[in-house]
Length: 128
Image (cartoon, rainbow, N blue to C red; front, side):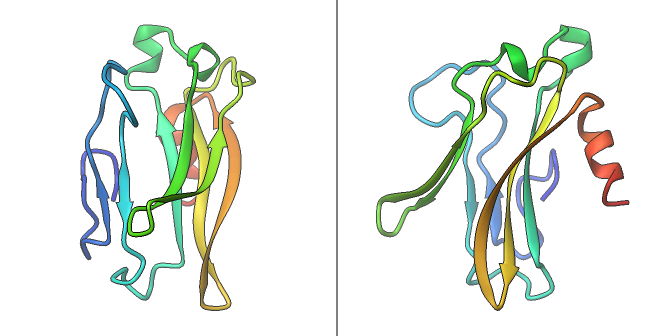
């Protein structure tokens, strides 16, 4: 799944769509992940959040309040993990909040909190 592709080819990862206003109650955006149907070749899922048109809008993550991701088990109606982004990102326009990765045949979550000032392209360059 990547940017405007709201669903992975195997259907295991689905994004609810981009909420650019922050309006509304509850979670602004959700990503549903079904690890039971994910392609076996997948070993890691990175959760990266970017600010749409950040340079043109002169915005960065230091200006955003109440930003977080959480891992929620919908079947059990339980929040498993929540990672809140602090206000330490004064120039960053993309942040890798965390990653879901496979180790010893078990899926795990790691909070990362690494920001980039070059947007999504700069983040992707570390994997190219």
